[in-house]
Length: 292
Image (cartoon, rainbow, N blue to C red; front, side):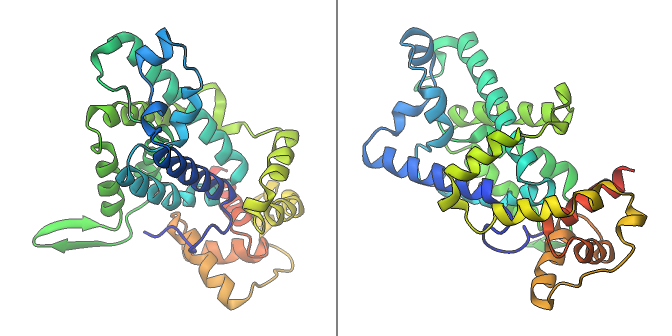
C-alpha cells in the first residue's frame, strides 16, 4: 500500500497539522519547555495549567517522537484524500477532544502514580487513525524477510509501535486513549460521521491558513461545488454523458491514490474522468456508489 501521490496534494489539513506540530515541537525544544506541555494530575487539577490541554496536542517531547509522529501524520493523509478535508477536520477534532478526555479521566483515577505525566504530542490523532488503517486499508503486497512474513502495512505498524513505546507508559496511555477515540468515531457515536464543519468556520480557517495550504483547498472547494450534483446522483447516472479525460501524467498518480484506498482500477478511472481528475470528488463518487 502507498499513500498516493507524494507531497500534500489534496491534503491541506494534514499539511497544517504537520507544520504546526513540527514548529511547536522545535520551539519548545529550543526553549527547554517540552516537558511543560505534558498532562499530569498535579499540573491540570492542582495548579490549573489548562493551557497544557492545547500545547499537549501539538508538542512532541523528543526528537524520535517528532520524527515518527510527523511521518505517521504525513502517511495518513490518505484518509483526508479519501473522505475530504471537511470531514477529516471533524475527525481530527473528535479524536483530539475524546482522547484528551480519556487521558484526564485516567489522570484523575491514578493521580500522582504516573511519574512525569503523560507524553505530549498528537497521540490521540495518530493512534486513532490506526483504527481505519487496520479495518479499511487492504494489504496489497506480502513478502518475507528471513522467513518472517511482512506486508506493505507492516512498516507503518512498526513506526506506530516505536512511537507508542518511546516513553513507555507515558506514551502507551495516550495511545490507548487514541484507540478508544478511533473506535468511538468508527461506531458513529452522535452520528459524528455525518457532521461537517459549518461554512463560516471552513471559510475562516481557509483565510487564516491560506499561505500555508495555498494551491490545494481553494481548488478542492471549487471542484467540489462543481461536482456536487454529480456526487449526489446514482452511480449509473454519474458515469453517463460526456467524460472529461484527465492528462496522462496526472491521471496515473490519481489512479494510484484511489487504488491505494481500496478501490479497483477500472472504477477509479471512471470516477476520475467524471470528477475531472479531482481525487477527493472521485473518492466521494466511489464511496457513495458502495453505500447504495
